[in-house]
Amino acid sequence: MDESKRDLFAERPTAIVAAEGWPFVAPLVAATALGFAFAPLWLVGVVGALTLFVVAFFRNPQRTIPGDEATVVSPADGRVLCVDEIEAADGSGAKNLRIGIFLSVFDVHVNRAPLAGRVVALERGGSKFLAAWNPRGEHENVRLAMTLELADGRRVVVTQITGLIARRIVCHPRIGQWIERGARYGLIRFGSRTDVLLPPGSIASVKPGDRVRGGATVLARLGAAS
Image (tube, rainbow, N blue to C red; front, side, top):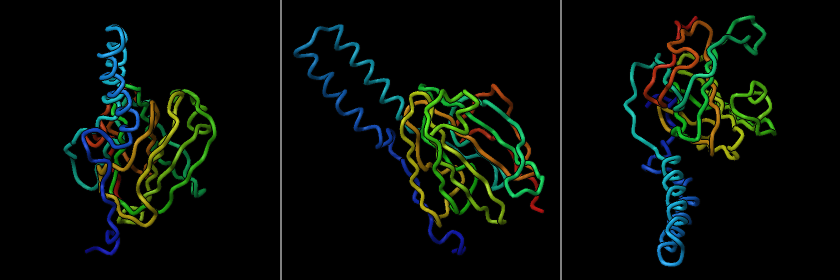
């Protein structure tokens, strides 16, 4: 086995309903069942509808991953908020391609790796819970940035950002693990944003306003390594 892939991340969540949702789903299912015996029908309907909503929120569909190793797949379901370039943090003057995705409470919230790589950093930051579409949110909201080092040494950052309703970020990989392209690695509860920062020379395949599906939509293509 390639040394860089020796510590392979085991994809999760993989169940049809993410395990992180059961602490919410189970009490609602119980309340709905009890409601048939002790509550008025309209209340049972309300609780039942809420139960279905929470189950749908934590749904975790299988996806067919398109393209090759240079194909960047969407890390999340949702709507593209921005496609722009920002200056690289190394001070070289190079421009990284950034693609931001807004996830509404109706979107699948399981996150996927946009490219295959080794996890070299997991950085938490922020303290606020502003609306995910608020430009300040990308800098001030609670977030977790996962940096992946690709096989050719270039680096990609995928950032999970909380929103107005979201309060918890789940990110399963550990530093040093290799994660495959399109692998499910975590989620955000409830309503959020996910950003991808790609190496210079990457070419976007989407534009603001486009709908994307995690692991299934092609976001961009990597340029040739220098």
